[in-house]
Length: 282
Image (cartoon, rainbow, N blue to C red; front, side, top):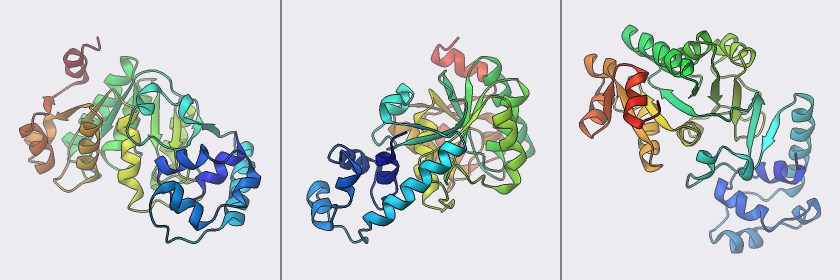
């Protein structure tokens, strides 16, 4: 891993595209010391209001490198990403991976943290069916639908990937620490673009969701209220040109978000085989 990249990743007021741009203009650690507000504003074409702290960025980047080496964290740059993720509008600057890097086809399965019992069973079944067909299940490790999708993939003996909205050293929610251990133990992985120690703040979840859909060939929404992270995921997936499916449980149980997606053209499914047939996966 390159220390200079970890240092740039510590400049948290920069958007991913801006980190990519800055990286193309910074070639060694010495140049980091000379970054100032005027340089950044000219390079980025916008005003900078945050404090400029090169020494702090360098110290934090060095600490990150030592910690990730000790924990065997893999750091990927954009040319090493799965091809689908490289193609999105705003790919992460870096991708930190704990566990086995998954290179095969992926399916995202997401939904509400408070699903019905039917929704919980649907998430588990979809995760199991997708993994049984050789697809890695991508989700966000959240309570409810996400957790059951991961569980189903593990039960099928398949791979599953948890994308974090926090540092890769923080399992959130903590209730899913046992599940996180099973993900790693079954050959899956954790993925995060944020530096170690980053708390799971609210604004990071929709940013995280673009990675979930970006890694995946399609996105399945199991159940979703009208105002939910799952609806944000669906919107992002459509913007990325991904097919979005909704499970029948969300229609039957009157989940407003799920019903809205179906009314707008998302295919309603009851099993993963229907997704494969629709997209000619099989």
